[in-house]
Length: 604
Image: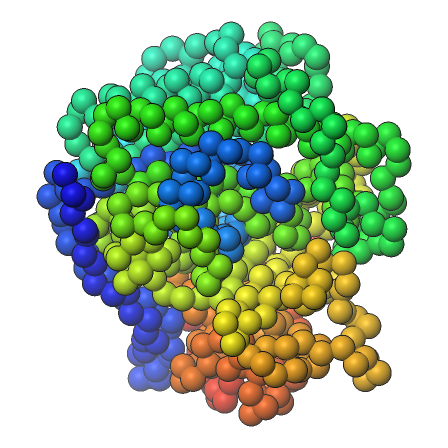
């Protein structure tokens, strides 16, 4: 049967006015929620959402997954400019399921008290997030694999403070201390007893995911099935289990352990460079020695080997959908929670940095109305966009939910609802995560990993590609990634001097580094505390009349004095958690009166 196309009214960007008691009107950036139709259950699409753990884009891991390419990338669309807004699993996954940036979820870590499952529940998200919105609109929802750190055998579902995952028709999730144990995972399905398995984890998750698809099909309602293996995350273990060998490395299924025997980390310009790069603690790192390089290459091979079972999982899902004749009305999405680095900028294996290795991640989709074999490089997307995207594809109104993201342009409904943006706001608090042998490094040397960052890109005649990072210790980094894709030449502070002849091209025009830096610094401050529509269209926070919507617009000489006069982004100190007061005030909008600005900042 030919799938029915879902219609959806266009999401319109607006600048609203809030009237205070004395009739002073203040601008509030908002996005009008589309009133999408409540479609009949029989024509609502199904969803299969596959999410790996810590999968890189920049180290070419996708090139080693031929089945993923065959069944999803070649049959659907790859979003080549997709980003995690926080390069850590719990914050990133929370943003994905809520559509809110990390500074608005305040789930900022992988451990309590600042993150993990306990924080997720404490913040109220177990009562109001994506699966609940789907079930309220006629869907059955299922989930298997890793959901959040901190879901433990000792607490999950035991008391009022540690609820079972709400909103899911059924969920069979990995629990600590067995979550990252590749050969002895432990899981709990709904209210059943915890069960310890002697199976390879990805094969187990694959089988459970296939069973959920079959159960969902039999139930006769539209469905969402989330399948989340841990690969290629590093192995950890606990309880009575002791893996053999006992290594903090990814572990493959035995059938894949022989693969890629000579493969090494891609020797890009930023891999173990001869000169230091970056800012903060990164610029103080020594070169990796011979033993560390061998460990890095071993780590890389193990990651690729572990991903082979995930590749087979994709094929098993596709064949199941084919057998059940569900292709015509099912979207299959593949992504991960955050990226990864191994030796880039001399950093040992791990994640948590603002560099492209850690935040640039895979996202691809196939399904009804999705263009086949297309690589979308003309749009910038991120994980905050995922929840509104899936609701849009399901024909479910986005209101009354307030999202910091916008539907991605997938199919006709997504194209209509998408609000284009050229930036991604990236943020982090606390320590980076080191893994493998590097796990034993002295963490006291890396506690200043709190930062705000931007990735901002233009296309066509307005093509440019920039990265900007502000560290809590005061360091700033600016990269022109058109000429420096590996982020090795920090244009600050050397190019703030009058003698610097380096320029950056935006919209076909060349500008000084200082002029560009001033605009980006204003933008990162507009994004740092943004909510809802202001996160999607942050220039309207700085230009209340709406005449600036892109970086090219902001480069107009009319605004030189304004951006030059803005106080630059800085932190009071390096907190390991989100402290809005430590990140400085919201910038004063262009041509706004002091009185209006004071009232506006009181409001926000």
